[in-house]
Image (cartoon, rainbow over all chains, first blue to last red; front, side, top):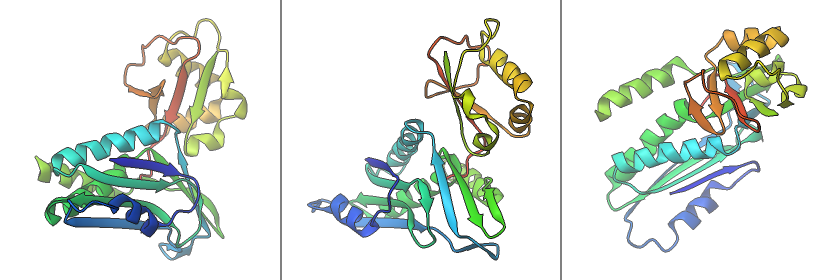
Length: 153
Length: 84
């Protein structure tokens, strides 16, 4: 399991290549990349700022990834999360999973992203022409997280 | 001396001078600290009261506000998280 919090732009493809290098034992590689958006609800976004709590954020993301690796029987997980100032189109988060079977890898990436959307100690602030605003947790994400817990019971 | 960390929207209203503080001697617990901060910094106090604020002591989640504070403790105030 590899967890990184980075403050500079990163290349998801390069990260995936390193993660999967020499892993002839794995027959499935699934990845998801979240990108900075250019607009939210029709309002132009100039930049996104993501704050972390150094140390705690990485520890919590590692804990979430650990839970998912056990639940999905998929120990090989990669999370790279950007913090700081992010321009639209830049990668915010990369989650990747290597597994023997594709089902485990798909599930691990899907569930870990849902976990990160609600439980990762990160604070986002979008800035546009109308100023900056902190992003509150979305109801849809919380509902998806609750549904996920029921699904996994 | 305590180290205080304010995240998210709380960082907008927390004065920079709160990062390292020596609270009064009668501030012995987390509960005391929150009460004292709310009294000293009403804007911050209202911001903390207006939302669910989690307290993290020395990088560990705590729900026990009667926890005694120790010199050198780092206390973080976490408003609701935006997620990844």
